[in-house]
Image (cartoon, rainbow, N blue to C red):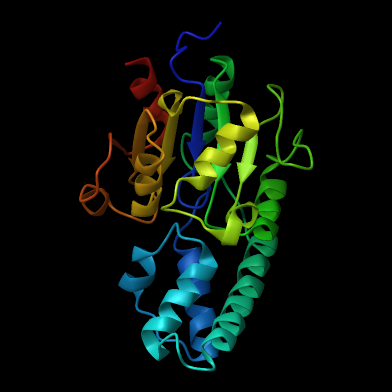
Length: 243
């Protein structure tokens, strides 16, 4: 029986939170931008980490061209397609590893009968590549819902949300709750490494919204946004839950 009955579900971001990211995703953005004539600074792209990836390209092209330009949508699609090709090739061919403390924390949550959910700014296809490479897809059904015996219990991407709306909207969190039958957001903890992760958890009115500082954003960057705590490692979540 769980010693922490007030927590039913922890929803984690993927790249930078549960999956190691040494700026690889950002680098894939820059490759796609350079090859398609899009201007993108490191600070601007990093500020949008955690967003739906297509929204990043829509935003950057809107800033560069204006949304009213007849070639705006075509430019978005070309850049986004190049990004997808680059990103998928990366995750298919390069090492994919969990972050420090991730597997130990997952094991502890399973022992405590606390469900594990993953959400992400990635679209479904690349998310599936990552889940498969890590073995975290085992036991998930066609709706990406598992059981208490599967490694994770649910996976949600912007691809399953109307209009591909990702963070900072709360919809991926709410979809994960719905799929698992978790009704009260005050029994849910959200953990991520970007400002949009923090904003999504707050928008979903979750029990705790926590940032990890060993991902894409440093502690001083995340500290500028409302949060319920900043973690140097995922394993520190255990102390937050047990209090």
